[in-house]
Image 1 (cartoon, rainbow, N blue to C red):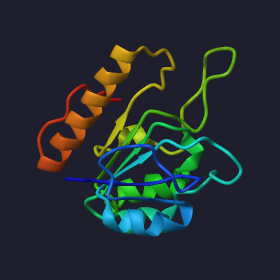
Image 2: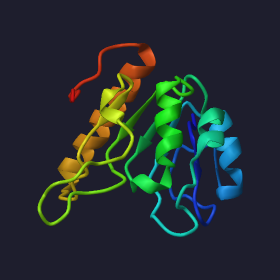
Image 3: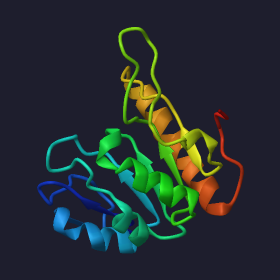
Length: 159
């Protein structure tokens, strides 16, 4: 039975099991129909700030945002506010809004995401093998399932 939907720049998705795929004009529909939004688009002028307060509100109180793309696809302050105010249930952020400079010093965002209890923060690591990728997919899926069921999450990092 098909589950899920996708929004892409082209409106096409080469994935089995989707109910439908559409272009970015279908983003409101996707948000209305989804409990989990996985952001995995490239950062371009067209995608910068694509997800803001209005989109997070549409995702809703049971919604979970997972950003594995680039931080600025999701408006930082809007995401922080939505998490703080429980406009959405939670987020898993594998990417950041800024990165350490050459001296290795820096903070990942201006907003204090680490103070919130409904966000999972992970470092964006680009080294990947097929086995690593499959393991990450399984871990993410297990945590989404656990979060939806109200169960304890695995591999939680407390700041």
